[in-house]
Image 1 (cartoon, rainbow, N blue to C red):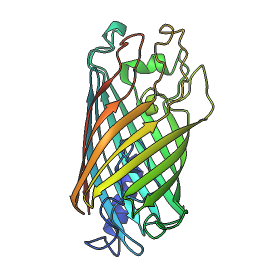
Image 2: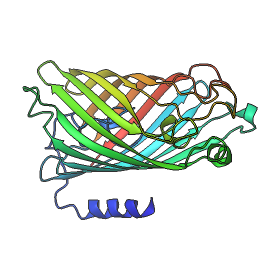
Image 3: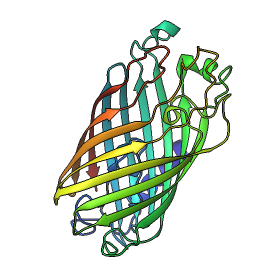
Length: 297
């Protein structure tokens, strides 16, 4: 991840025109997802991050903290928006399993992941096309590298997972400006287990699986929005090694509120339902709170 980080910083320092108070409308650049791409908290949208419009460069930085009954997630990163056409992002995730994996002798294990994302807007403009049927459409990829610590030998051995993988996705975002509604559909081709924190692929499936992700947001006023998200997940890992259903994946969902008092700061709070994570070890559904702050430049 070191070289992409250097390239991103160099691009920002050499940008001829940074986004200032002009550019896009409040909230139309989305917030930072846990993977670093602009969109909702759980899924990318077709929008390009920051408030940079055509002919401008912009940047964002974010930090997110989510806490459920038995897990805690810290995510942080940066992104650059170039001419409202191209987005490049870098993010790191740190999942604290706390005592949830103690029955496996992995008390206090941290699962970490580095993510390099690239997104290209291919057609449409969410704001300018708001009175037409045409959505904004973008294609993206997320290259992920997992650091599984003491769980690595099991994940990358008997369970058949790999420590790196790439997600590919297509997003369509439709903004109904008069009604104050935003609808997004993302189709993700992925081999990731728990978004990649448990590696990629496994004995039950090494190939890509197409998973839908949906977001719906309602603009209550120009600086405040509420919404819901849903993200489908695949099942790739062999259940026979740790017991039947030990690492079965449930879909993710949330209900969120996003407040953007100005173009420099955005705050998002959400209630998240991550389903059962490692259900044979910890059978309870993992629900809890999510807080995220994004800073735009």
